Every structure is written in structure tokens, then in C-alpha cells.
Image (cartoon, rainbow, N blue to C red; front, side, top):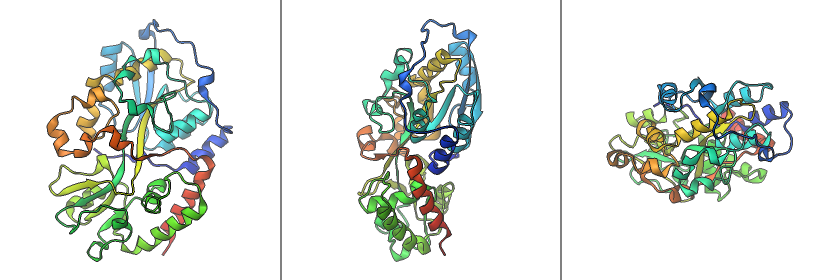
Length: 365
């Protein structure tokens, strides 16, 4: 599976896009929900969804048609930025359901672009872990339904690293034998994450003094890095070119011999990708039926089985092949462990500080 960097958080882009379309102070779109018909004839509706390529079964439209009786068109987006630009361009985007990362759902909702989730039309919400309603960007799943979730940590070759890493300091102040054999992510929030956690700070901090200290740590380790790598670090690890990398849990190739994943003792993040229904949709009943269909254990279970990401669906996770859980231990961790991570939230215009940090670190000689 090719991870399409679903969690790329160029929040400066998001803030500017929303400002351009008239964004201001946060508002609660739940204030004026549409009146929906639980008995609507779904065969008279149709859906267009937008999702990352490879993040759902290729035959999803056929499956939906057979189960729910309406046509579904699947459009692909490569990043959150791409779909947000489309949804905030003004007018009807033509999208009924969009898959976006949690902090993006939060920002879209603040602009009144999302339809509140009508829980009576999504009975399969009962399949979610209770913890799935505790995510900071949308407590109670008011305007979004989580699709996948996970964390970030250190992915490493146990046969090539003398001492298993336990701290972000193992990455930011690497042992001599690890120099030029480690990689970090360059995407803004994930570039800053190891340094912030090592400093005991929030991954959502907007304190400039703290970000300046994080920058110092990132600049100090830069000469020791093999590369900044958000996409091919798994391949580098398997080949032995890299021996330790900053990675998302689901993208750490732990099925490979001698590859392990560890969350540093200072803690990490909690990311989530979600399903949201656009307020502009003329097919809201079908949209809710689609979300409910995805939450069916047999349907949602496709995700861990095929793209190796954890899902917040207890009923589906209970059905995951034990052999797969053995090969990918992160899949087997309970939500309580995952929720020890700090949820990434939208920072609005304050996120420009992260853009500046990333630019300055990347450009430094």
C-alpha cells in the first residue's frame, strides 16, 4: 500500500483557503441541521465521495450499489490540501462525502461546511470503541465519523541498532553508529513532533519560544540525518540504507524480519482520518447510509486487512485475523494505549509558525 501522506498538515494553506472563502471565528454547524427522512427512497439518490487512492476497495461503488441500491462515484484526492481547496472554492463542489484528517474536519466544520451527523441514520455508530468519541478535534462525533487512527513513533531494524530506542532523544541525538542512517519526516507538524515531545511540550503548541527551542534541536540533528523522508522510509529501512526512522505506525513494515516499532517514552500524537458529509449535499440520506455501511464490521474490516491501519471500529477489529495481529503488533494495541497520544487539532492561522519552522529547518545549510 502506498501511503498518500493523508495527514499532511499544511495548516497555513488551510487557514488561507478558509479565509479566502470568508472564514472567520469558529461556528458550530450543528446549529441548523437539515431535516432528513429516515424512510427516503435511496434509489433516487446518488453519491460522489472523495477519498485517497488505495484507501478503500476498488469495487466500492459496486458493493454500495448491491447493498444500498444507489450509484456511487469515487473521486480521488492525493492530500488534504487538494480536497480542502475543492471544498472551499465556493459554490457546490459536487462532493457528498469527503475523507479528511481530523483537524481538517474541525476546520471545515468551523466554517459551517459540514452537515452534523444524524445519529439515528447511522446505527452502526454502536460498533465504534467508546474512545472514538473522545477525539479532541470532534468530541462526541458531532460532525465527523473516524475511519482510521494511529500514532507516530520510531521504526527500526533490531538487528542493526545496538540498543532498542525508547526516547525521541535516540533520534534527535543519535549514537555515533546511527549517524547518516536515520530519517525524519519533513511535513510540518511531524517534523516538529519529536522535538516538542522531547521538550515536554504539546504537539499543538503555538508558543513561539517553545517552537524556537524545537527548531534548535532539529537544526542540531540535521547533519546526522540520512534524509528527510515522508514516503519511502519503509523501503530504506528494509534495504538497510536506514536503520531507524520516524514513521506512522501503520507504515512501519513490521512484517519484515527484524523490523520493530516503538512509541518513545515522552509520548506522541494521535491522528485520525474521518468521513464527513457536506452541508451542500443534496443526497444526505444516502450519505448517512454510506457512512453506516462503512461501519459494518465486514466492510470496515477491509482496512486493517489490506492497508494495515488501525480502525476505531471494535466490532471490526474483533474479527481481524490473529496471524495479522501477530505480524503487525500495533494493530493489536487497545484504544486506551492509542489515546495516550495527543490529538492533532486545527490551529488556524497560528499554524503559520509551523510552516515557518519547517521552511527554516529545511533551508538551513
